[in-house]
Image 1 (cartoon, rainbow, N blue to C red):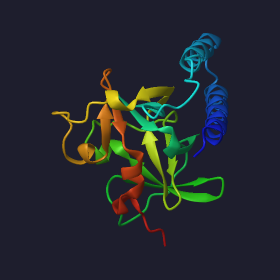
Image 2 (image 1 turned 60 degrees about the horizontal axis):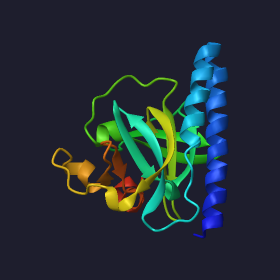
Image 3 (image 1 turned 120 degrees about the vertical axis):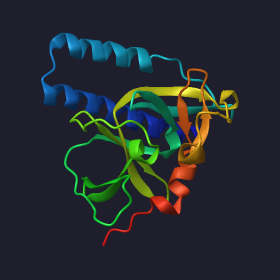
Length: 200
């Protein structure tokens, strides 16, 4: 994908994230000081200078929280972020499949990474979000706690071997940052046949 196309895609995603935060603020009628704090946080996150040219060592990533931990995934795999509202459970599916949701007329399955990665569970709230992942052949959503922002990560700075990350989490691991963010491998997630949920 060319740099200009990638920039256009990320500009559109940033606009969607802005609209998403505005919708959340309206939905929950947050106090003015809370809204102002969120706006200041978003301004700090997005004020980070972007690199003029991709050098092959850096990549853009969406950062999000999950069960008290911080995760990231490459932007090229992220189609959009939407609020998690109504869903329909699916019988006879793995425990980590929450169900399906309607995303503007598309039926999308929802994966609960907390269950898949054996992380602590808490009750779902209206502020949970869905990160829609897609490539040419696959589309599904990751259930997350909160979007933290968009950043650039250095690929060669990621730690590949992590002692406390084993099993299924290691399968989808791209690496761990110096801040101990777990960076997921979007290509592996999207390419795994186990993630293909057949909806009759």
